[in-house]
Amino acid sequence: MPMTTTRTRFRIIAFVLAVLVAAPSGADSDTVFARVSLDDEERPRALQMSVVTYEPADGKELLSVDLVGAIHIGDPSYYAELNERFQEYDVVLYELVAPQDATISGGLEKRKGILSTTQVGMTKLLDLSFQLDEINYDQANFVHADLSPDELRQSMADRGESLYVYFWRIFFASLDEYAKDPLGLQDLQMLSTMVTSDQDDSLKTMIAYEMTNIGQVQDILGEDSDSAVIGARNQRAIDVLKREIDTGAKRIGIFYGVAHMPDLEERLLDQLGLQYASTEWVDAWRLGGETADDTE
Image (cartoon, rainbow, N blue to C red; front, side, top):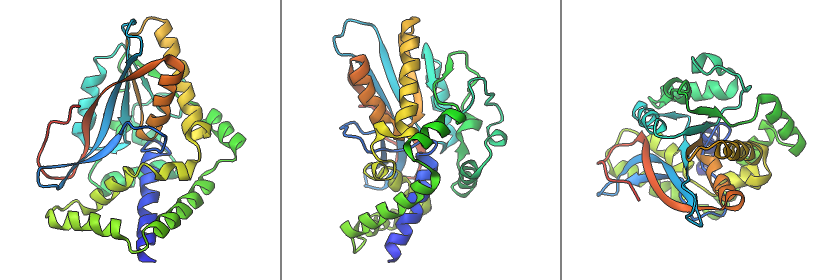
């Protein structure tokens, strides 16, 4: 079952890079939050993260909230563009499982453990940079909007969640994918696209496609709104958002892993009465091909 083994490996990599500290998710949303952009010759051009804007449905209040999708390793140019965008907001609510008074400077040195070690290794393998080393968290408008490690551990324990449980969910989700596509036609199609494109970023491209497989994460985490990794942390972000709106903020960015976005969108619509306004795209990983205008 070679295709399943390969897909399982890529799924584990994508999960570590994206979900536990960030990536794509599976809620019932028509909004796209991550994609692989193609050039005019249908070659993979870039893994892109979205910046999705929401505004009051009644149009009466001068308020806009952007969901700024994050991936924790990316091109330096990706983080440079985000740093510029962040200066335009009254406040930026950011994701980081850390104590409220934690210092973020020196990101690589302060992120110990198996997850951060894997991410650091992937930055070298894929020739990318680490988010905590590139984003300027010292900007005056940055506000922490996440759980502390103790709060997250307790929330996971309350729900029976653990890294061990996630691993086996990844494995069995991969078996389900194999049952749907036993000949590996999706993998062959993806490989064919990369081979014919004469690109050198085959590994990066395969991982990029896996990270945009929106349906996989719900199989791993369960219902987003009920999970600690997504739901509990998202509600903390919404609670901080409400507080900042009450203090007068009008232009707000929520800088969270892209896996959080479908559930965050649902909370913005249900709890704050906002509605979708527009989407912009930012290149997170360049994969070759030609550039394009990606504003919608």
